[in-house]
Length: 305
Image (cartoon, rainbow, N blue to C red; front, side):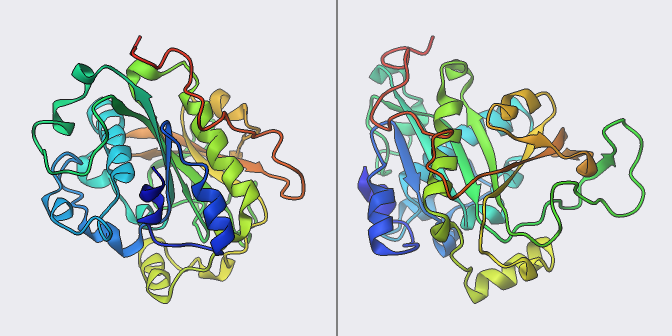
């Protein structure tokens, strides 16, 4: 599984990159930022239909771990929650770190799209099913974009500029997002595995998170989210999530707190709130120690119940 990461764009110092690669296993793939390689991915087509990427040299193509992550996102966000397929892949996917979780299932339970439809695709084995994913977007980030139906937590409409309560407008922060678990595998620890893995990697490799964007990426960032580059990229522990309404309690398990100043907004037809967490980068990552990457979560092997 290490080739999934080695195919991706190198980030950070070699020794640290090797250590990060060593966390890969049969149950979690870790994909470094894909940058320009993601131009091969057609956002208007499902992950099971990416002919341009399939025809490309594997050393230069989008790795299967990311394709698998997109298949989970399509199932959860597009099919289950009604997000427009074309909107699911966004600019941040080019620069994010991605984790994809897998389960061992009988070969006959694999989706047909990963078997017969595209026999030439570099794909998972017949008993390996992608079941969950999460991404981490490094600095710089905007706390809020321009969303619809923005209102205070009490429901009254916002007037004027939205000002976060937890962010001073200058400090670089990371964003966790696109956490998605297939319906059949919820409630058995996959979310915890993915969130813990992302937070632990960020805690242990903050200088990799703080790797400055290229000149081209800076221009794209300015076009995509406005002039936020003055924030810099040196990350000191601040983490943001855009949490769907109803999931605040879930995220509070990791110490995330709702930002009253950010209010509530509509994102792809779903109400969200902002939640923040500050990590102490000077201590060992006790609070976010992940499941072992080599230990399959209970009830996974040979079962979707």
